[in-house]
Length: 280
Image (cartoon, rainbow, N blue to C red; front, side, top):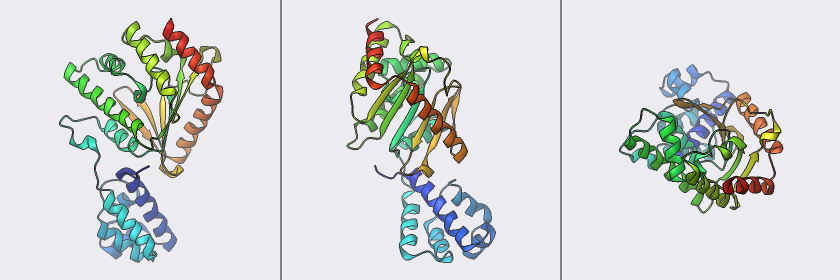
């Protein structure tokens, strides 16, 4: 998988903090030595805002980094300024969606628990339109189509030569809820089954018969990077979304997804249930 700007930025921040702590310097001391403020250096380390590569080069020299480390971090700083395809869109998109697109462009795996709707990456256009019309009741048709266009564009990551692995645990309620009517839903389930046959897509159904389970609070997505330190959890909320990356938060959602996948139907039984519902 290609390393995108957000992954580069997160790697850079983590490495700068690691090198500084090895030297025993405070944020204030390190910043003053290279002519930047404590607040600026803190932003560098906490992955917020842009970074200037000359400052990164100077910091690496103060931290006694090796030439290889310094070269690698300077390249990360330069690469973090690259922008994704969605930056050129004429219509604005919500901040939470902006970050989701950025992160999703760089993941190696996504773990989805979906309790309300089929995950967006596996939706048909008609199904996505029905979802947006229902959830964005104050939006006009142009805005709905704009958001659906973005969702369809997102799905192109599944067509890459090396796509991320998409693992979905879908509640039976989302399989049975007739979004857009019977025909739209039938085509959606057929579409879902076709994707489930791909080697990089795993689809399991969490049946009603299971009863209470590990994620009754709602849907979430764990976006997994090349290392565990780059993982992020996204929780969908009314009017936006919440991103979490604290170690304890990530571990809680990783554990919840592990339980869900263990409790859900196996792949063959999940496919049989989806097929049965589509025929009904």
